[in-house]
Image (tube, rainbow, N blue to C red; front, top):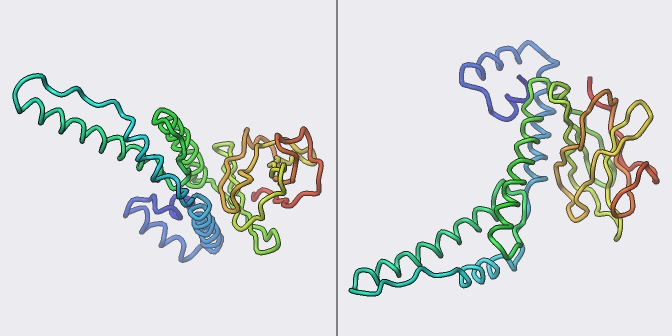
Length: 241
């Protein structure tokens, strides 16, 4: 219950019972403290400031919305048409604004509302998968100092067969380079996806299952990635047991 407790996902009764348990269990208290710290880093990693151009893009999109035809007779239909146009504009603005702030995870810079909705669905799915790993009953975490003020935490759920890497303060890779994630299968490195090269704080769901991996690593690779690590790891973390 440590993961659910750290995310405040327990009922009042469960919360009270678990706090009584924490008072006498040093191992659970330590685990809860680590997961709470990781949850805080996760919030930081998911926070992105929208670009200055976003407001103008939203307003331009509103102006291009096809309007409801006005009524052909009488005053009431004309007013109804105007009201419908206003509602249409406000509805689209609300949708785009909601997309821009959904989970605090994505900067919405698309011109078309259809693209924004597709991105919203993808962001919701990714955020839900990360939260599910963090809140898993068997979630375990390990944190490492990556140097130059950067830290990295890995949260592993063997039940879900998933792992999440949370980075804070990592330097951006050089131009044309990316951070590639790897599963460590007892010395054999298996690609597990990439980090966003434009962000110093982020949470990434490792691609593929944990399987029997004993840890994970991060290397700097050419854009597009490598079949196997080609540089000295910037991070190596063993999975907690």
